[in-house]
Every structure is written in structure tokens, then in C-alpha cells.
Length: 273
Image 1 (tube, one colour):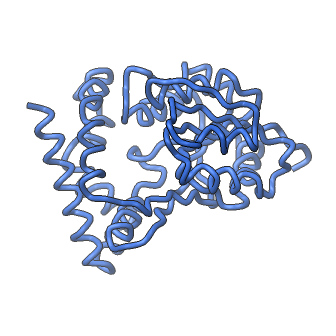
Image 2 (cartoon, rainbow, N blue to C red):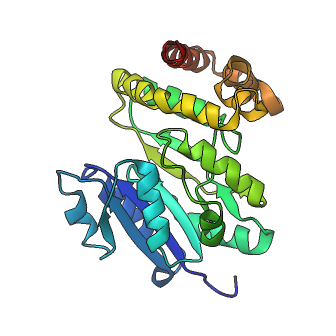
């Protein structure tokens, strides 16, 4: 790579003092030149030491809300980088992630990239969550995280009327704007404090926005049918492109994953009433 374009990393936070340091430190040790990485923190009224920790690494710490979409949009408006990477505070970058992402976009003509995630933590349900997440990479259940800032702004950023499916909505619009790809480097997503009740409560909170998202694109839209329909979410995404073999290789994880999917499905059925 002859040159090193600037990259703005935007981290949205709210009471993340337990996670933010690990996230920032993974940015600090990237193999990409640190002087070409701009760090932006957009915090939503944290009552803990999140902002205090962040200010040790950057003076670009903002307080904004009310939800993640608005935080990300502010970050993109304040960013100066040619490229943008948006993260949650509980994510940790593999060391070559930014370097590879810039190289793919520069040399492959991609305007945005998916980044595979590995769920990190301890306990059986973490293994189940990691198993489930591994099926989603670069599918319509996934969403891009890295890309050209000008293209992100060109499509209008994130829809601030959505909370939960704003990632899917953004992903659909960026895919219409140009070619997308996927990295080999991964993101570690820290769910060490995984709690089944909190997980389901969060899904219930997001469910309210999924109806609005479906109405925006039309319930007969083919991608909406995949993302919110029974066939693809419970079978298609796990069976396509030979992925069904992994279900057979890990029957306990597969059954437990379906237990989670059924519990989430019940929540969405209640919301549709």
C-alpha cells in the first residue's frame, strides 16, 4: 500500500467503563500507522468513567443521543478520515484489521466491508452465540462496518427513527451505492457478561423498531422476507452454501441455537399482534 489514507474509528458508548479501555487499546496496537487513525468517542450520558477513560486517548469525545444511530451519525459528521470504522465499546480489533480493510477498499474497489465477528466470553451460551454468529457473515443478517466516509454520508447515514434494525437499513442502502466485500481479519465481540434474560429483554426492546423497518421497505420486499421471515432466519441462513454441515458436526450447539432463535421468535410474534 503506497499511501496510508486516514481512518476515523467511531465508538458509541453508554456506561462502558468495563469495556472501553480494551477496545481503545486494540486500536492503539494496530499495524496501520497510528498517526493516520482518528479516534472519535460519542457517548450517551454515561454515569460511570467511560468519558474519563476515553479522554486519555483522544480529545474528540462527544456527548450525544438519544440512540446509537444518532451517535454514529454525529461521529461521521465530525470525522475527518477518508474511511470510517464504527464500533461498539465491547468490540476488540484483531491487529491487522484496519490495514487489511484499507487495502481491500483501495485495491479491490469496495466502498464498504463486512467484518466477521467472534463472540468472546466464558460459558456455554457464549459458545452458542458464537456458533450462531458464524453463520451470518456477509449475509443480509449482517451489516457493513468499514467503508468510505463520502459514501456513508452520501446515502444519509443511519436512519435515526430505527433502533436495532438501523444496521440492516444502512447496509441495504450502502449496497445499492457500490460494491461491498468482507475481510479475513475479525472483530472480537465481548459478551462475557451474557445473561439470557438481558439478551431477550434487549431483543424485545428492538422489536418495536422492526415493524417500522418492515413498513419502510414493504413487507413483501424479498430481503425483508429473509430478515424477518421464518424460512430464511430459521433454515436458509444456516443451510445455504454448505453451512448445514456445521449443524451436523455440532448438534448440541445447533439445538441450543434454535432454542434461542425460538425464544426470540416468540418475542417478535408478540410484537406483531
